[in-house]
Length: 70
Image (cartoon, rainbow, N blue to C red; front, side, top):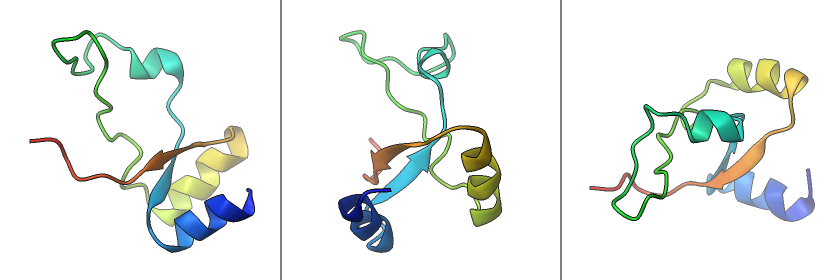
């Protein structure tokens, strides 16, 4: 993990996501009117234990923590 990512993690500004591209584009994912996929937040609230287990299987992408869209 790069230093900048570590800083963002410590500040609670990013979280690891283990979803594949195909999972992100799955038919049940919400889509906006422009056709773009809205991330469902699948990995947003993983426990530390879940993060360790998933990290052992694949490298995460880092997502910016933003408020839920209303």
